[in-house]
Image (tube, rainbow, N blue to C red; front, side, top):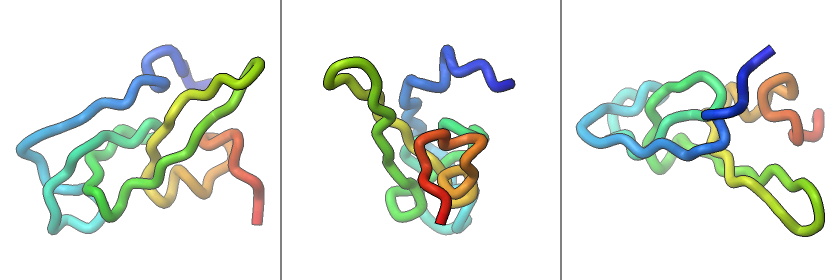
Length: 76
């Protein structure tokens, strides 16, 4: 089971290349796998809880599609 304690924080990066497209400058790290992502490859989601609260999450396409990582993802 993944320890989500640090995963709820969005981590920005500088001076790295996107690990998905391998061409653009990375700006953030995937909350699922930790890969550096550019603006085009990142996917934002909001994990809602409680009464009107939510944590912003950012995923690579693979982690976004995996319901064991993005637990709020609706299977297609």
